[in-house]
Image (cartoon, rainbow, N blue to C red):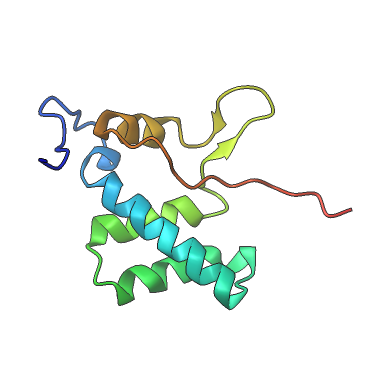
Length: 111
């Protein structure tokens, strides 16, 4: 079986279309697993993801992409209705590559 490849007609309008979202999302799952084991505070996830990428020898693009997934300011966040707050363009880039699952940020009210 041949691995999936990037669509030949993929856009090049921004950096979101310049790398492998399959690889980045696999790395993001590793980050989540390690963070759970190590009880990483949610506020520290961006830094934790960056460190994980460096340890894994990730490219600059991969590091920026995985860090953005865990950035509180840049993370993909479901809206209260349909769609997302942040992440529409990243999600589109992922969909164009055939990625169907990714990391999203959910705010939990602990009151």
